[in-house]
Image (tube, rainbow, N blue to C red):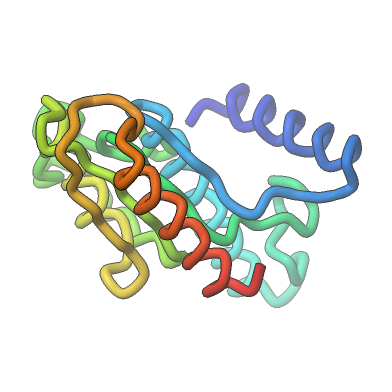
Length: 173
């Protein structure tokens, strides 16, 4: 994602942490916001991996981002693909299959919940996001009988709530 966007998001997170003394545990994205949330998680993973690989760098991998802060899980509702990242220009946005990408993005390796609407016109890009960009061992995908909107039925909302609580328990929150 553009550097200006990264700076704005980091400043917003820092200000919120300063206000309440706590950080964020997870990130949630709906529709195109899911692409941005996926980009945040991917940028975080790349930053942490670079920090772990660099013995001379910050042990927390914080070359950018909010000091000592990591998202521990992600929620994606009717999200689309691909993630919006600094590597955006290297990805083929015309074809959803990723075959025209100039690079292969690593799979995001934290717990994620993906809510897909069976009647959503963008369900295929949502499924592509989940299956291509997230670790199979850590992703949960629920297909609900809904269109391109937030879950409205109580049973659907309970799947969302239970999924978030399960991930929170899994990561020790």
